[in-house]
Image: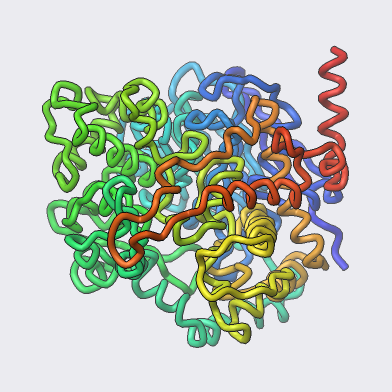
Amino acid sequence: MSMFPDAKILDINLSTREINTKILPGEIHRLYPGGSSLGVYLLLQDMEPGVEPLSPENMLVFSVSALTGLPISGISRVNVTTKSPLTGAIGDSQGGGFFPVHLKANGYDAVIFRGRADKPVYLYLDNGKVEIKDAKKMWGKVTGEAEKIIREELNEDNVEIAQIGPAGENLVKYACIINMCNRANGRNGVGAVMGSKNLKALVVKKGKAQKAYDQEKFMELAKSVTKRLEENEGVAGLGQYGTAGDVEGFHDEGFLPTKNWTSGIFPEGAKKITGTTMYETILKERDTCFACAVRCKRVVDIPGKVDPLYGGPEYETLGTFGSYCGVTELEDICIANQLCNMYGLDTISCGATIAFAMECFEKGILTKENTDGLELNFGNGKAMTELVEKIGKRQGFGDLLAEGSKRIAEKLGNNAEDMCIAVKGQELPAHMPQFKPMVGLIYAVNPFGADHQSSEHDVFLVMPPDSRERKRLAKLGVLKGYDNPFEIDDEKVRFALDSQRYFSTLDTLCLCQFVWGPSWELYGPDELLELCKYGIGWNTSLVEILRVGERRINMMRYFNSREGFTKEDDILPKRLFKPMSDGPAKGTTLDEEKFNKAKEFYYELAGWDSETGNPRDTTLRKLSLGWLLEKDLKLAKA
């Protein structure tokens, strides 16, 4: 049996240009085997509470996992961890493509950035060689132009580039980090932190994939992907239509967030913007990530208007720039998506913030005097796309919108906060808690704000007991089925927490949640254990796997507790507790009393204090996190 591999960490101080390498021994690395688990561990080791997110004292950590680089579907993800400028809480963001595997191929499990460069720079990693280089030529450029300049300057095409666009340079609170000009570490404003450090890009020379511990068994697992795709209609459909295929289905059910969550149907636009329409009209090709057979990434082409270089919109983007804003033209949404990828903006927060502003405009809280003369009504796609560019540049009205909907609402007053659809300041993804109450529960308690990929969705508990989905969930101890997804009871809460722990492990191991998961995905829990065993010789168990995920959640929650967060911040927007007003779901409601009881039971199951909602000392010690308490004790004595 293999020992768990050590982690190699590159530590860069941009203020002093000091470059260090340190090794995290395998016995410790096994507790935090990658992703944001490793990232938040490094933050908690070195960063004091109360640091301003956009100050030099904030740390920015890129991390992969012990598994990254193995040649199998769904394994090329990179995580960025920091203190979020959008929420003030822990910041966490995952992105895919080819960059992650080549960061790992350069020999590093994590790269830490500290301080702030005195002028724009980028970091270049070339198989052991580390250089901090001048970024003056590409500063201010959109991602496509900047990538071209970097390749020309290095005289090297054989590189992968994770970079910020002008939005990150301009410290837009929801700026993201882009690689391949269309893959994003999107949420929490990680790009703004990178911009605050005058860091334009992290550039890595391409290298070789990681060799499996048991090559024969590993290849059997990898090659089974063809049969799995044939037998799994859900994942095969994801490949054909992308996540964009969900638009019409959610509309037909009555749960497609529309016009800033005032409705669940979009009759004038749902069919025009769905993945099927995209597939039949403007889809150029299906792109993929390293070694992945699913090929779910959209690439669209609208000559003279949308460049295939910038990919194409996924479901969340079609929701936020489409139904959220009442925009019916697929072209306008694709232009908005392209602008986000050019400027480096999170499409969820950007579209949702514009939708919030549109409702404020329609209710007279904002006027043309505030909006640079724009008629900011729902459905005005041209105004929407103009605002995306203004936000990226922090120009005019875009400067206010760059702050995110929560800060805007606080500034506007006049009940604008009732129209702000966010948790902890992060705008909600396009999955309605009225339809999926346990997704809503995780929205509320999740340490880094509302996120739709931090747990499994309620709808899979409606599947038959002998279905693939239910059989896999049973391996996590989730045994009860339901007649509809709307119910709330104790077993549902247990399902939410256990699936959250599982998904937390996936984010730790930097695995794609469409390929590796506990229910409908291509590979299930049994195969995850095989991947660990045959991939790196880690002979683990579901008990350890879930403990890894639980440890990450509790470290994040502990980080937030140091920043003053409590259960009082675990609140869903009031609008979500009102009955649906129209469509097939008319009258359906998220019962506030049941929801709050479920939240209290979640805290109890999680081992969190009933008064604060933060981890109890015994919970931290159970998870091998007692060092946090000892560290804080030393600080208190000092």
